[in-house]
Each structure stands twice: as structure tokens, then as C-alpha cells.
Image: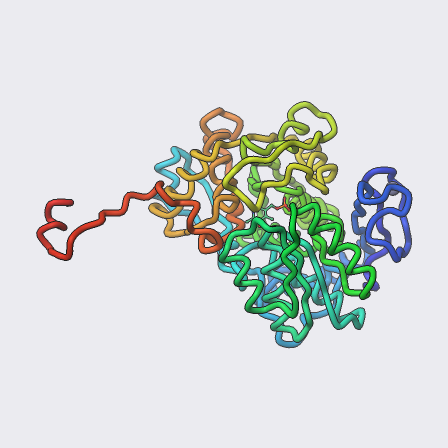
Length: 405
Ligand SMILES: *Cc1c(COP(=O)(O)O)cnc(C)c1O
Ligand SMILES: [Zn+2]
């Protein structure tokens, strides 16, 4: 924590040297903090230990750029996921240069592991024996999985409506799972009170500013994997807005630290049935909560909590927001499957669907390089493809295979 110098409220702009609160005391839940470091010290550390010389195959290769000092013993390795480009996929989309950052291969199957790894390290460094969160799925399963590996108890609050795979992934690993009657908002409120009462470390997604720091590592890796270059566009599927904020912060910090002079443009992708952040980006206004309706459960956030940072990332980068229908998301899942062998959950494929759309609409130029985050595994909710894939139900005879072919 020594490296963190200030926390700045994204709403009122006030800064705090140290703060016992996770959000701005003046602004409440609306006052999400941004973490600022001693960048001179960070520059020195990068001079002494350049990115090129690092070998740790996890996000802890960047501890000097994070609020933690080391990986806790036992913690499953998150991050340092592959960056691919598939000629046949590029051809299908009509673009030469699409990179896919495959975060489906993280320990619990989603990019959320990057945030959980940092949260767990902070809880352990702070001497807290337990950690808790409310989540509709990936944040919770990620926390349960990684906490178990590091010997930390986790208490997880989920809403009634949660995909089965995620629920049982949590159930297998958590110290306690509470299925709260009601919506995600209800689960969030119960979790917040319980965290206060029992003094657990708070991994509640959008409000804990250190989680964005973990998510930041995805962009740092892309920079390294592109041989210390920045793509023209970075495409991110957006729910609460933490992932996209983290990616933008990473590139800004790389620039601040003299590692690059270029910044990418950020493309925020949401589902047509839930696009409050995309609407706010395109109208340059505040977010208005919406009734959310989409198959992409991991980005089904009608009341996004970290929208201010997300909208700013898109605006400051000269980026854009696009929305994609559920049908377009399913088409993207199938294209990723057939041309890349990557099985993504709907929210995980939404970024790719948005990239396709932005290329077709000329938002992304044909000669511009594009990196797309694939944020979560399809095994999290395979039933989303029910009815979308053709399955030949046949009698047990090879002749019926012949008929089918
Ligand atoms: C959480 C999540 C997102 C969206 O991230 P936000 O930080 O909420 O914007 C996208 N895809 C997957 C698979 C996720 O789990
Ligand atoms: Zn404030």
C-alpha cells in the first residue's frame, strides 16, 4: 500500500491521503475513488526492472504498479492470458488485424479473477481473515475460487436469479453462500450490512477502487504482447464499467511512465436491452438507470455503479459506444467458436460482436488494429445457446449420419 499516494473522488474531485472508507464520505456510493500512486517511484522501479525483463506468468508481474506487494502463497495464478489473432476469423469479419485477449482461461473462467486476486492480496496484507461480496455471478465465483486457494474464508451474496453453473462453482469453494430473495440490489444491500457487522473485507465490485487496479493488468499484458505497442482500438463489454475504466487507466499510466506516447481509443459495448453507459457516452450526459433485459447476464446492469469512470474513458480516448442485440451476441459466440475455438459466455462475446459492428459501420477503420477482450467462459452459462446451435438428433445407426451429411 506504500505506493498509493491518494484516492480521488470521481464525483466531487476531492482527494484523500488515506481513507477508511471505500467511497467518498461526502458523495456516498456515487463517489467512487480513483487510486493514484507515487509515479516517480514507479518510474524508478520500471527503470530498474523493465517490463521486458519480467518472467512471472501471472498478473503479479506488475506488483510495482498495483496496491499490493506480492502474491499470497497458494493463490491460483490469474492473468498473463494469451493474446491471439486468427486469420480465418479476421477474414470472416473482413478485417486484417483483430486480436483476442482470451480471459476465459483464468482460474474461475473470467476476467474478474484479476480483481479478486488483488482484493484477496489486500485482505491478507491487511490481516483480514475473511472477504465478502454481492454479485450476479462471475465476481462471486471468482472470489470464492481464489479465496479458497489462498486459505481465506469467503462469504458470497447472490440474487435469486443466477445461472446454475456459477451458483455451484461458488457453492463448491465458498465458506458461505447466501441466496437473497430479490434482485441483485437486494443482495448488494444485505452484503453491505453484513460486511459492516462482521468486519469482512469488501470486494463489492464497482465500489472498491482497488479492484479496477487488478483489472488494469489486462491492458498491461496486451501492451507487452503487442511488443510494447498500443492497439488503435480496445474493445470492452461493459456492465458496471470497471473493466473499461481499468483498461483506460493502464494505458494512461503507461504513458505517464514514459512507456508509450500513444493511447488507444476505447469502444464500449453493451447489449441493446441494457445500454445506459453507451447512451450516456453517445449523448455526453449522465447515466439514467434502465430496466435491463438481455441474455448477457454478466453485463445486465441497469443501474451501473462505475459509469462515471467508464463514460470518461470513452470520451477522453476519443472512443465510442455501440450496442448489440442478443442475436448479434449469439452470432458472435458461434463465430468465436467456429473460427477460433473459443467458447465465450454472452457477455464474453459481446465485445467481439461490438467490434464487428463498429467495423461494419466504419467507426473502426479497416486498417486500424483492434484488441478485443473476451471476458468470460461459455461454460458459465451454456444454456444461452439453447436453440441456437443445430444438433442432429439421430437414431443409433451410421446410415442416419449419412442421411444427415
Ligand atoms: C463483469 C463482467 C463484464 C463487465 O465488467 P464491468 O466491470 O461490470 O463493466 C463483462 N464480461 C464478463 C464476463 C463479466 O463477468
Ligand atoms: Zn466526493
